[in-house]
Amino acid sequence: MFSKSGSRGLTVRRFAPIGVAMAAVILNPLRVIPEGTTCARLRLGQVQNQPVLPGLNLLIPFIDGFDCMDVTVKSFQRQVAASTSNIQDLNAKLAVQWRVPPSQVPRVRREFGSLEAMATGIIDPKAEESFKTVSSTRSLDSAIGNRAKLKADWESTIKANLRPYPVEVVGLDVVNLAPSEKVSEAIETKQVAEQEALAATYKATAKKNEALGVIEEARGQAEAHRLKAASLRVPGAREVTELEKIRLWAQNGSKVPTTLIVGGEGGFWLSRMLGIR
Image (cartoon, rainbow, N blue to C red; front, side, top):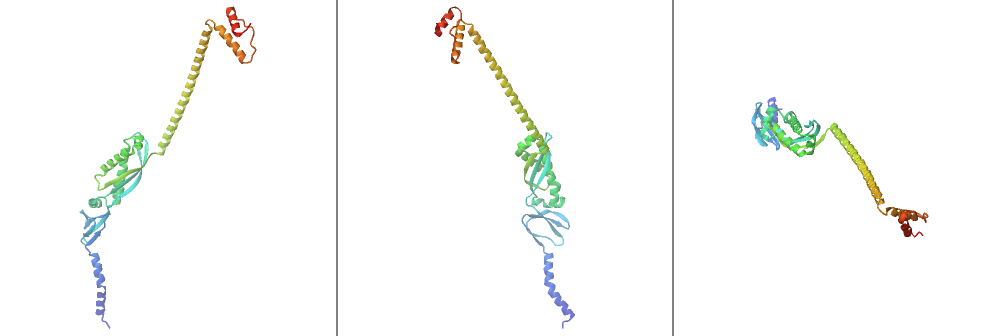
């Protein structure tokens, strides 16, 4: 039989490798930081200024700790209601891409605690504030009609507003830009009114032109009558008129009179022209 002391020795020898392995894991001074990640070194709870970059890094067990952050590009979209210089409501959907430079990870950990806290407390509000500032400097037509200029001004404004903070704006875009529903209805109402007014103008112009045409036609008829009346006063006009009457009688199938009294020598001359004996 084994003695108690022998049994204890056997147990110690059996678990010794496990203990060594656990101690090696706990006391392992090496850490591998993956790509896209940067850590802040906490030494006795204090954030150190130098970031811990990807790769194999050394830390002192029980003294050092790593607080790692994702330094790849992140993005968010936000719906914003802004106002233009002519006090018109403008709705926009903004998209912002940003990242934290690896060198700024210790500062983010020290001042904000985490990326999420900095995003919700700084980046998101500054993006909205910057866009509202830019939209307030232009009219509704200018904002919608020249979106590229609006985007460029917003980009320069947001970068200036975020310059004091440990963040980098990689890209941004105005995904959707339109007047508010109320403004859209007002614009539509205005357009309808303008179209109706234009149609009324066209109608009034047509009536005016029609009236002018009637006037001109009356003037033409009056001038024609005047010329006819003047022509009747010239010598021989009466005989021509009587001849025209007879021609019309003949064309319409009426019986042509055989006796035409016009007086004077003209009557004799007209009778000879008509073949009247």
